[in-house]
Amino acid sequence: MSIKIEADCILLNGRIWRGRADGICQALAIWQGKVIASGSDDEILSLKGAETQVIDLQGRFACPGLNDNHLHLIGTGLVMGMVNVTPDAVPTLAAMKAAIAARAAETPKGDWVLARGYDQVKLNTGIHPTRDDLDAAAPDHPVLVTRACGHIAIANSRALELGGVTEATPVPDGSVIGMTGNRLNGLLAENAIGLVRRAIPAVTEDRLIDAIEAGGKHLLALGITSCMDAAVGQISGVTEIRAYELAKLTGRLPVRVWLTLLGDPGKSIVDDCHAMGLVTGAGDDMLRVGGVKLFLDGSAGGRTAWVSKPYRDEPQNLGVQMLPSDQVEALVQDFHDRGYQMACHAIGDSAIEQIITAYEKAQAKTPVHDRRHRIEHCGFLAPDHNARMKAAGIYPAGQQAFIHDFGDSYISVMEEERALSSYPIATWMRMGMNPSTGSDSPVCSPNPYPTFHSMVTRQTWRGTVMDENERLTREEALQAYTEFGAYSQNAETVKGRLVPGQWADIAVFDNDLLEAPLDTVKSGTRCVLTLLAGRVVHDAR
Image (cartoon, rainbow, N blue to C red; front, top):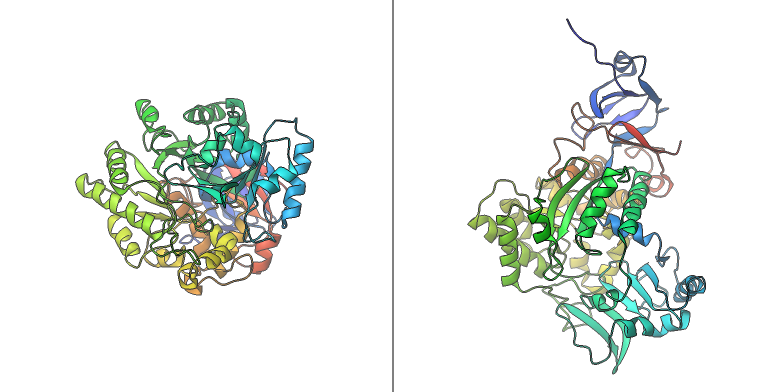
């Protein structure tokens, strides 16, 4: 006797892209949160029962829910409450000062004013703001304005005072404290930012949960159903793990999250997590422990990425090396031996060389099949790096949003050839390395449409073409955002494609990402419906 399964939900009358190898279908059936069948409307309607929810897509384009391979979910939620000083919001220094002054006017004197998102290359002055600029905007408040990349911040005089930063303050390892003549100009880079941040009141557990929920709902509205939180513990230590668990238990975790644990010396939460059994793979498909993060350099646009050739017009500047190689190798070996995947920040070629070598040595000493150690960002490579990564099973986790947002900045700070060939996603695709993509939000907006446009065109926000040999087809770009996003989290068997047995995480758009004009995709697309495990979690129809 056969038992007919009746679908919990059916999507009809759509153009549903199931995956690069799976093609387009018209309809999809979902049961217990997973895809059970796909085909024509008539075929799938045979699975309709009395209780089946039927959603008419009205011809719209649908695909697997997008997966942002590297962002900061808590940070994304927290930044939503800060002063927005991104180039779109404040294109001039005067506008930035006005926005900060407006926030200060509604903030009690003495309380902090925090802002995030400027890029000096896009600012009308072409240079970083200074402490004097911020003092003029908010003389009665401590102010900290963080560059888009997160690796440089500008503090005003009151913030510097509260952080105990003076002209005599020793520069921490892996840092820059900016001076103009013999006076602090407010610029802090890398570890030096922590001198001021430690004076900011701690983020409470409730605010962490609020940020997780707010950031996750924002992602769902963009069609993003999965992400990696790229440095858990960076803001509030191991309390962030508790916040994530409570968010999940109380139904306030909107998206699937792959947790990357901060492992930097002096800030690491790995020992605490390891003692609780939180090693790579622990958890479930909603919340899972992923890799361990080490920061090995800074950002290219901020001239702190560690490179082998100096930055333009700064012959002594090779960026910032965060940790000595012997320490990196010892840390990687320890984490590798304890069962952790690694996901280390390395942008410049010197940092990439350092971490490739560390991974190679760890794997040679303790061979593990398909550990899939990652290099986060992996922007500016030496000629032999890709082949070595492929041979060692090392995964390049680049963010193509950087090409759109920062490509022109790269050209301005280094020789053009090195800048144009950065973040070589098509090379990784041709080599069979299954490259994914993401935003590093709040470094860049998690909005996927400009990134998708840039992956296909290699154009920056200004229209500059960054090495057309690294262009992807539209299907390759969508595969990077879906199936290979899942691959980057060792989850390609459970999500990333709309095939039987995988989670019914689905995004529906008002433009066809594979057929609509690219400029329309970039600036005129909305996600109108998002499903997570077959349940509608965002509806803008």
